[in-house]
Each structure stands twice: as structure tokens, then as C-alpha cells.
Image (cartoon, rainbow, N blue to C red; front, side, top):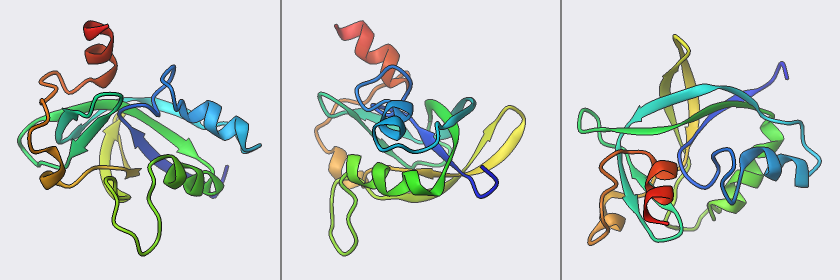
Length: 137
């Protein structure tokens, strides 16, 4: 994938989760994302029930996730999963974030939520959705 992009996934798009990035690519006949590694991105994580929401918050905490190298054709699939549509305001937005993974800085697509969306939502102190979900099961 010479024209590949990177994405940082922190919730249901992580490996083994309900919207597993690799399964999403396979369903659409797209090249399999390549795991670069686990990483932490600056931010805070909140529990929305069946999924988390990350708020970009520099210097306030870290969110655990995975960095993948993906084909550009997968971006519209991710937008659909996260309900990010041109000209519409939704819960999630698509942004670019620098994430350090395996000793390298990657410019990653990430889907955070607005800080105003987390009012009244419990913070996931560990910053790790998978560990949090498993602990509450």
C-alpha cells in the first residue's frame, strides 16, 4: 500500500471489537489494514455505553489504541461507521493527530468527540476502552 494512510483506533474499531477495522475492510473487499502497533494518544476517554468517545486534551491524559496502515479507500467506510458525513454535525469528527508508535511519529486519522458531548458521561480513567469494557462485563 504505497499510497497508504495511518489511523489511530481506540474503541470499537480495535482488534476483536464489534467494528474491528480488519473485518470492516474485508466486508468491503478492501486490502487488510496492517497493524503498526499499540500506542497512546493524548486525550481523555469517556463511556457512552456501547462505545467510547475520546476528547482531544493535550497534557491531560492518554488514550490507549492501535495504529494501522490503511488503504485510502477504507476512509469512507470508517466515516460511515463513525457517522461522519460531509456538511452534517454528528457526535464524531474526523481529525488528523500525530501519534508516536514503535518509535516513529505517524500522522493518523482519528475520530474524537467534542468536549461538550461528554457532559455527564463517566470518564474511563485507564484510557483503555477494551480493558474497561472487559472489567464491567
